[in-house]
Every structure is written in structure tokens, then in C-alpha cells.
Image (cartoon, rainbow, N blue to C red):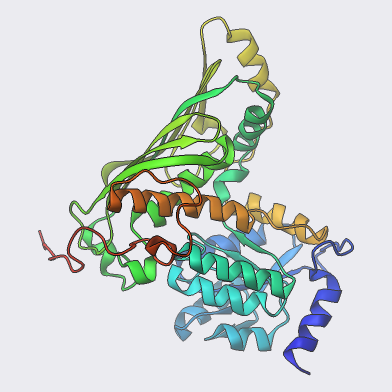
Length: 394
């Protein structure tokens, strides 16, 4: 049987967008394959296990045979291989979860999508806009969906705030703060793929701040321009370890952004100032309802309290909430959240931050087309510092 025949059969089984509903049960669960069995893969396996038996990790692959065997043993995964191609031949999958280093995502996504298999990718989904567009072409050709892990979009209060912005319950958004203030010592970058443009894609703007940037955009809407600076202050990396940006959104709100790996008191902080209230979210790697705070503007106390009390509650951020939404989308033949266009909006802003920082110009959506050096790499024509930093062992 040829690959094209296999793809046709898989599409007919309910992989095609808009296909008839398919209900996943413990007897016939969603069949998940995990690619890359390092630290984040455990979060995926744990979240899949939380879905009441309606999904199961049935296969995994990793270039490190001992690591994939440990993963199989820990999570009771029947099939383990050392390559994606071997995995796809060994087991019939509904969806592939990419938990591999960022430099591998594009090719792995294209391989699975062309076979009609859905793909869920950890962030960043690709190293560049060019790579993401290649994934989009494979998605269109293969008849399956691609989604990016954006777990902070799915907490109850984030969903509530998104709806509240849409219906104007808190008034117009005016200003905001979007900070990822994390700390990573020099030893963190001993992993070969970290701190390099060609395998990690960028520094904290790309690999760490992307979570808060994506959450901010999902709540407040698309961006319209950005001005930024980036620097390599202290870490032994080729990328930046710090960036600052001022982002103007399509609705006119202005958001200040800091992405740092130099901050000993770590925090992830989002603040949205509306006409009638300030909404704040502070956490580190995941939030609960208690991580949110709302402060009404004078004269709007009762109105804001009523709106806040009506919102959903009880679900924090995390992979499980997004995986549940993905499972439902597959059952109904709908695009998987978070879609490629959603991911591209965030990745284009990140490219815009680098482009502005390295060229000293104001960047707008659409400026980074295939003629721009920042389309194929976040470094553009090169960062304004030496490619190979000297390592200070202190």
C-alpha cells in the first residue's frame, strides 16, 4: 500500500476538516504519538492521562534509546522507536505531539501532516515565519490540522477576559504590561541546542516570552506596530538574553514588554488597564484562579464586581485544558486550537521585535515578507554582537 493510499484511508476515518463526528472513548481512544521524550513530554503524558481514558499515548520516539525506553516504562507506552518515520510505520496515530527541540519541529510537522496526521507542537512551533509557512503548506496538502501548545489561553479567567474584551464589559483596553522575567544560569545553556539562532530560534523573546506574548494577543487582539531593543547582557549565548518592546495593538492599546533570563526574582506578569478596571495576572509557569486580580476604577465598583462574579472559574492554565479542547475539535472535524493563523500572529510579532531591535526601525504586520532577512531567521542579517561569546565561568 502506498503512502497516498494510507493518507486517503486516514482522511476517510475522520481526519479531514469537516468530517462527521467521531466520539473517543476508553475502548476507542484518540491515539497519541509523542516525539521527543525529554522533560516536557511528561507534562504531555500526564495531561493525556487526565482525559478520562478518551486519549492514550500509544507510541513515542526519541533519538536517545534509553530515554524513550524510560518514557515507555513510566507511562505504559507500548511502542517506542528512535525516529518519527519508524513510529509512523509502527503504529496508526491520530495526532503527533512534538516535544522535541525547536529546530526539529518544522520537518517533523511536515512529515506527519503529509500523511494526514494531526500535529500539536510545543513552542516555538517553528524557527521562523518561513518554516511556519512550510508547515501551513503541508497542512493544506495533507488534510490534517496543525496546532501550537498555548496552554495559558485555556484557563477559566483567560477565557472570561477574552470574552469580556470582545463584548466591552470592562470598557476599552488602554494600556498593558507583558513581562517574562525569568532566570537561567550559564549552566542552562550547556544543552547543545540552547542559546543558538539556528537550533533554538532566539533567546527569551522566542523561547520564553512567547507564552505571555501569545496570551496577551489572544486576549487583546492583533498588534499593529512594534519598536524594540535587544541585548546580550550576561549569558554565554549567541542570541539575546534580554529584550524590551513597545507594542501598539490594533485597538489602540499600548503594551510594554520585557523578556529576560536575567531576573533572580522570577515572575510572569500580565496587566491590562481598561476604562473600568485593571486586570492583573501574576504567576511563573502556570496559573490558577487565585493568580488573577481585578481592581475597579472609581465609580465602577459594583459593575465590575458583577461582571467578575459571572465569569467561569475553576480551571487554571495547563496542557490538560488545551488537550481537552483539541480532543473535542477532532471529534467534530474542526480546526485544532491554537491554529496556524493564531500562531503566526504571535510569531510575526516576535520576528518584528527582533527586526526592530536589530535595524532600529518601527515594524508593522506584513513588513516581514519573503524578501526580508527576518523571514527566514529571527537573527535577520545578524545580531549586533559577536556570534561566539566568551564564556565567563564566574
